Amino acid sequence: MTIKRILTACIIIILVLSGCENSAFFNPFKNGRSLNTVQVPANFSWTLATKVDLAIDLQLQNDSIESIEGHRIYLLDTNFQVLTRGVIHDDTTHLYYKIPTNTGQMIVYFPTTGNFEYIYSWACWGTLPFPYAWTDPDEETKLKYLELPEGASQDPGMKSGVKGMKASVFANSDFSDEALTETSTYTDNLNVDGSWYVSTRNKGPASIEEYQSNSALKFGQNSKKKVEVFQTISWTEGGEFSAQMKALSPDQDRIKIKIFLYFYSDDGKKLRTRNSSYNIKNPDGWQALEVSSDVPDNTSYIKLVIQDLGNKQTVWVDDVTSTYYADVDADNDGVNDDEDDYPNDPDRAYNDYYPSADGFGTLAFEDLWPATGDYDFNDLVLDYRYNQVRNSENKIIEILATINLRAIGGSFHNGFGFQLPFDQSLVAGVSGQEHKEGIVKIRGNGTESDIDKTCIIVFEDAWNYVRVPGVSFVNTRTDSEQADPYTFNIKISLTKALTDEDLGSPPYNPFIFTNGRRDHEIHLFGQEPTDLMDKSLFGTGNDYSNSANSRYFNTASNLPWALDIPTSFEYPEEKTSVDSAYLYFIEWAETAGSSRNDWYQDKDGYRDRKRIFKKK
Image (cartoon, rainbow, N blue to C red; front, side, top):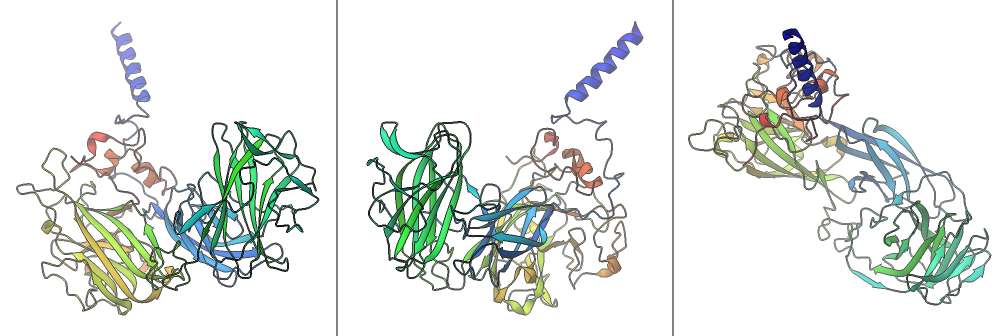
């Protein structure tokens, strides 16, 4: 009977542990390994980010309507937010950006024609052939045209609500007059008579009928044939022109619809075309649609075309309006004010943030190098956000850094800085550092002396900024008194604009120097030291650096002394190893980052919450 009870108890324990697989419960069987025994592959770089380094080769697939010189290609995330951009010269451009390794899918988008290609965070370098073509309702194409979500702009670089005037320049914009005029083709018809025309070339159905107590344009009607409804207006103003409307599909199936703007000269020559594609599934409400474009020189006519792509289900369209923006470029830098983050500054045009405009990354250090410590990665914790300010040619002319000093989990008096890969002579000036200890020497331009590369020392001793009287460690013990973070705002002005290849990616080459010893640096895994580092320390203690192979700041088992997390990191409690707080940290390390590269995220079963510091 006793043996049976023991077996029953063992089974219950196993079931309990299995049931806690997806909770914060610490499973000792699953997490039996530790950082003292972990086997980290030699090729693992301990990075949680990867670089988009992609040359875009634009390949025209039909007749050219206009030059694309100086146009922009955008890198978007899956929420259609702009990550970065490239300016086209000689049918090529380059996208350079840093992203978390678990980003997954991204979109390379060319708003001039609407073409796009998907790329992925595990394959985002080299050359991307990018076929593009001006789409036409009369032409079949296998190229991809981006289908925009509700409320998204056709040009993601455009800001909304700037210098606009909304009106119905199109006649019968609410379709209260239920007449559609038939024509065999839409292409040659430039009649400016206030009529909505329907093309009969494909014999697709379209009509104006009453819907929800109002008249509206009706497409579909159990037909798979394409059909176009269009109207032409006279127009000679420059600037930005957009047409808006609303659409609704009462059915659950997705309905595809395209809207076009065509611009013609007085003699009927097509000058420009723009289109937006939509995939509508909204049985409970109307969806906003929009197509927009700069108005080319010598424009006399604008034609708006609404195309049903052969939907079997019904789709309704109503309330066609237009918005006109006068071209305003107050600083004459070639970027209109509605796209310009600095509309009154000819040297600045765009902000490019890393990791994001409203987010932070984290640098977390162990400070006992060349000895190993407790691997709680809280001896010095800093959040960072960088803004690479760009000119109209998308080159960097200024670097803005926000550094938040969050925690000191050790007794050492540590300083912090970062090195940039270009010569210090390219720096016009630096502001925002605070030097109170006299440890470092600074040139007149704000860079550190005795180093050819640009080295920025943010502070010399963290204890000057984040401190609680009577508390030995600051913000690493939840049950102790806590201090507010301290913020440094660094501004680096350059003497000339630099490319992404010149500058590299944030946070560049960050490091701490420990206990007032400027020559005692600790960098991220694999990052090279500065010229002021005492290189005789390499290979001592637990350090296994090999300068011949450009391998620095790693142990014999390939462990680091610092981590770079692409979000604001909730670091472990004092004396708590990171792998005991984050339950998939070791799996990430042992698989060289191929598994659990989201280990730091707040997902079910990823953390032992009681082992993580909590801000009061």
